[in-house]
Each structure stands twice: as C-alpha cells, then as structure tokens.
Image (tube, rainbow, N blue to C red; front, side):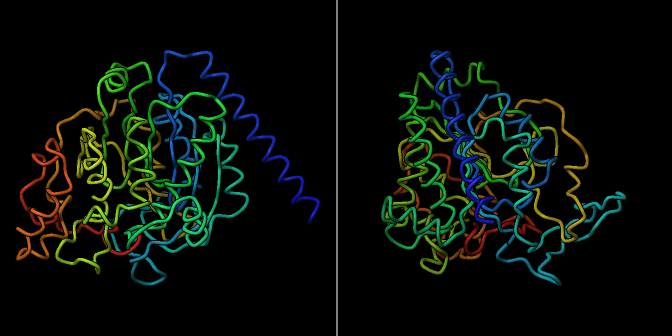
Length: 378
C-alpha cells in the first residue's frame, strides 16, 4: 500500500543516516588506522543465501572492519547458460539439496531476488556494516552512471562498469561527510565465497602499501583490492574512456584479433594508471585458494556445496604474492594464435614497465573452463 511504501522509505532514510553517523564517529575516533570501503557490484545471485553472507562477514568484512556499499541487480541470470531450464552442465556434487544429495547442474536463470531476500541481506550478517544499498537493473545503472560521466566507446561489461561508477559516487558522498577519504577500496562480485580471510586492518601489509606507492591486487574479475588513490582509475576512469584507451576493455566483436578474456580488463586499466599490480589468474582447489564462485543451483531448493560445508578455517589470503598470469589471463587469445604478435604488441602499449614484464607467454586455456568469457557479465 501507499502507506507501507512511505514507511519503508523513511525507515531506509533513517538507517542510512545512522550509518553515515557511525562512519564519521569511527573514522574520527581512529585517525591512524586504515579504513576500507567494499563495493559489491553485479547480480546478487547467491548473495541472498545466508550462508554466503556469513562467509563474507567473517572472511572479508570483520577483519577489515569495512564499510559496505551495494550497487546490485536482483537478477539471477548468466548470459551464456545452456541446457534445459537455462542450466549449464558442470561438476557433479556442485549443488546439494536439503537432504545433501548431489545435483549435476549448478547454474541457472532463477527468479529475481524477492523483497524478503533483499530485506534480509540489509539486516543480516552484512547489514550492520552496510552504508549504502541500491538495487538497480542494467539499463537504469547505465543511464544514471552516464548522467555522472559519459562513457566513450564500446565497453565490455558495461553494466558492471556503470555500477562501479555509482559505487564510487556513493563512496565519495560518505567521504565528504566524514571529511576523510578511505585508505583502501575492495571491489568484489556478490557471488564469491572466500576460503581465506583478508589480513586484518592492523596487518603490516596495509601500512606498507598505504605509505609507499599506488598498489592493487586482483583476481580475475572476482575482486580487486586497491589503494584509494588507485580506485578512481578502476571505478571511474575505466567507465569513462577505458574502451578508447584499453584494447582489453573492448567487446570481442569490436576487435576479435585483440580478444583477451573480458575479466582481464581491470588488470590492464590498473597497470595503465601506473599502479603496481599483483594478480593471480587462477587458484587450484587447495588451502591456498581465496574462494569459489557460488552461483545459483538449478533447483531452487538446492544450495551450493561450499555453503553447506560451513565456514572455512581462518587462513589468511596472500595478496602480496608474485603474479601468476598465464593460461586463463589471455585464454581467448589461443583462438587467435595467428594474431598473437599483434595482440602482445598492442597490449604492451597500454601497460607500464612494471606490468610489461608480467605479461605471460601464450598458453592454451584449461579444458572445461566455462567461466563468463563471452558477452556482458553483469
């Protein structure tokens, strides 16, 4: 009813005012500790699952005491999902039903997130640290971001980049009220479970990066951890003119001979901005792995097995590791081996010297790789 909508609106406004006040008090009270903003951008997918919210609260939010910014879509859609009901055949045991029987299929176009699921997300394990929450679909996200800054040229993952721009705008509003910028920004997908904890905010890693140079650590398109001065290049500049400056950020159909994996776009953008970038293209399923994509199971009553397994042990993620770029990073280039020399030369033109030496030799992609490397990943 109209009355209920008004009540909900005022409740949300009061909640945001409380969060802004809390942020200012925390930052004023701890001027020497690094501060963190986390941007959740993209489709909610399995972030509606309480188990995934608990995972991220423990492994990401609590160690950093981070403020959370959500610019998300309610959709549960994967552009290239195939098979009956929109599902994609995958590893056995990826999904489990309530009686713990395995399901063969794991990915689906399920119904949009409901009001109840969104309400729980806002007041559940992640709700206490949420500063900004916006559920906005692709077209509206692009329209609103375009009102802030025009995006020039054809840009891959355009809806995702638009949400990144909107997240930065929300961060800047909080910073203006607190009269202090954040020290670090984390951009992450909403459907990624962590199996190692972010180093606590008191760790030497954060103090070293804060005081020395512009730095970033990336893992495919799953997350980026960047110093605040580097965040503008990732969240705004990439949206504005990334397609013009960076071949890796253009759609495949635009320059098929320069078709890197779409998820490599942020890596090149950060390198081109002059940041020292450390990256891992893929991790094996062992104790070193930072996480796994927890995509929706085809059966709406089934749960991804990593959530059913419970929270992992508190191993610490190594973001300062030597870069491991290889078979995944330029996976699609293997389909255009005749143009490999052109690809390498063109990409190097957009990279700083410290990133140039990290560009890998061409290695064919891993068999069975079915990640979102075509079209728009929202």
